[in-house]
Length: 231
Ligand code: GLN
View 1 (tube, rainbow, N blue to C red):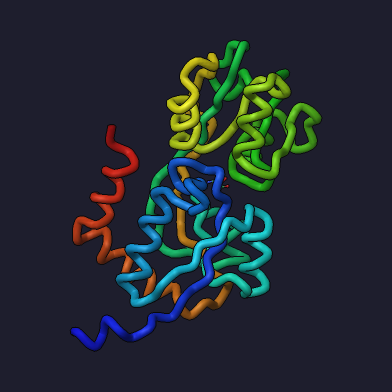
View 2: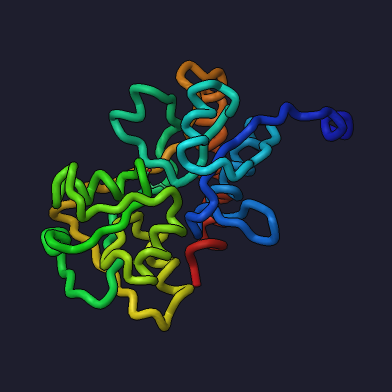
């Protein structure tokens, strides 16, 4: 046991999009959040260290394609299209789509019609919005990061933002006097599950699934969940 401590662990390169609180965001120059704590716990269990870099969303997927990154971790929903191109861990978090809006009345997804909508480019929020107002709708504005999408809502460039529930609620909580409201729509939006992403054929998937199971079973997951989601 003493000797094991001094053995250098292999460092895996991780990409993320760190404007997605509470899952990943920058704090004093460091990427922090639920995903960061969970990934570190799982990697540690599997016997690896991780180096997490705020690559941004598109560069994260490009880095996984080119195998410059070993892992992508960014509240990434497991979708059939993505499964064609990447390997995923087992699901680690259930999510759903939420509409954040300001100065308009929105009670369900249908009410998005005729509104100016902001989404983060290439996310399930974009796909959910497109399902309602059409894929080529000029009412949808696509932003590079979740932060830019919320900024657009804040500054009235859009009237609604379509994103993941926990992220919308966190934004609302952190920006209480902005008049931002939120609503979900279980009729129109499917439940989603986040997974850890690896390049296709990655050697790490099995080890990480095993380690994720352990972390789910041994109370570590519950501890991390409590830290980020319990008041
Ligand atoms: N869960 C959403 C998706 O996978 C959003 C992820 C994100 O913006 N970081 O598309």
